[in-house]
Length: 182
Image (tube, rainbow, N blue to C red):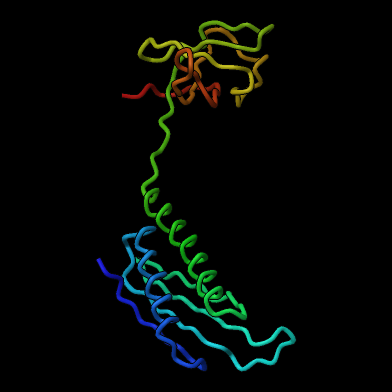
């Protein structure tokens, strides 16, 4: 798919090479996101007197579903460097956008309910029997409430199950009266 591209060059003598460079950089944006609806690029040299010489400004507006990505902060005395830096910033923002889109639907962690089977206070570890009979290891660092030294065998707890190297592990362990998942 070709990105709809609009290029505007202001206050700079028109250059086919600059326009070709912009087209090349814009075409590469599709590698980072296939969701681009539009791309507008403005290359200009504002009439500002600075001590550093004449600076090129490159503004990029990229339309994506539900949002717009704008880059307008890249200045350089070399137009090609200004274009490169602006497109690099746009690429980073597109990557961030793509990550947000991929994780738009969050998966919620399902808490499990079980009972404390065994505790080893000296080692700071314990084991929980899940509702389905699976045994889960946990360390004192994973106990949220109450403190590890206040836990008792037989306490009903809720926790988050996670596969670990040597079996199943319980994270975020807390005591309380919980409803068994039905």
